[in-house]
Every structure is written in C-alpha cells, then in structure tokens.
Amino acid sequence: MMKNSGMDIVAKRTKWRMKWNAMQGDKQEDFLIASNCSISAIVRDFQESTLILNG
Image (tube, rainbow, N blue to C red; front, side):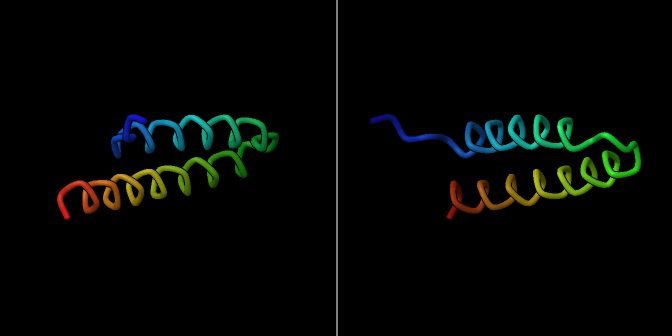
C-alpha cells in the first residue's frame, strides 16, 4: 500500500470541509465563520503534516 503524503491528506480534508461548509452555509454569516474556521484548521493540518514529514 502506498503511504499518503501529508499534502494528500490535507487536500482531502480541505475538500471535505469546503463541501461541508457549503452545505451548512445557508446564512452568509455562518458561512463566513465556517470558512474562517476552515482556513485556520487547514493551516493547522498543514503544520502538523509538515511536522510529521520533517519529524
């Protein structure tokens, strides 16, 4: 089995989050809040992945 690279995992999670946020985004404010949370989560995921790859 091939090992997933950190970026693949982040990309999959990002896609899922964007889909989820779009589904939840009936109200514009909620959508903006969700998007902001998503962005910080993506950054956090990326940092974790980088740590794992470098660590």
